[in-house]
Image (cartoon, rainbow, N blue to C red; front, side, top):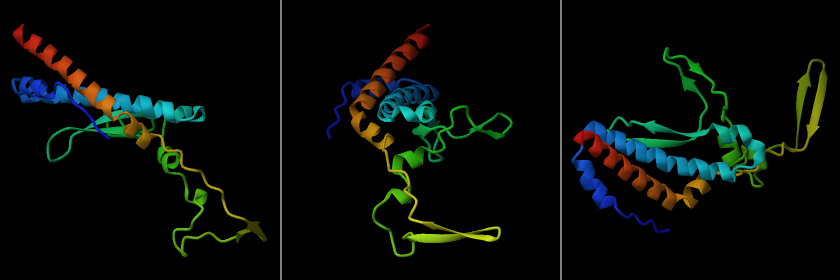
Length: 177
């Protein structure tokens, strides 16, 4: 896969003329724009039955301890209020990893003899001994986020460059006033 970036040298030169805080703000804006492209593609890849998961997809800016800026794209699962309490968002995508990777029961091969499933198992329920046959079917993997990222890499770069260029122009015009 080849990704072409046009106009990046001009943007880098323009960024050097800005303050560090402004540079970070501009880069964050570009990252969000690129992340939106991944979210759009991931929403298109998800079947309609996963509406809550579609609505839960979003982006979050990360500040690594080593400096710099990063972006996380995925399902929103919990939120932290100003008082430090955790709460669930309205559209909670806590099951995104299950949809993306599936469950063990959906795999045809066993991972190891210890993890292979028994053909039948027993469970005591009060005084009765119940016996079940067969194995749980599991959920087949329906990858949506990884393929969305792979298919939209050029769009991500284009959106990033376009947004950063726009923000640099805006910040330069703001500094002239």
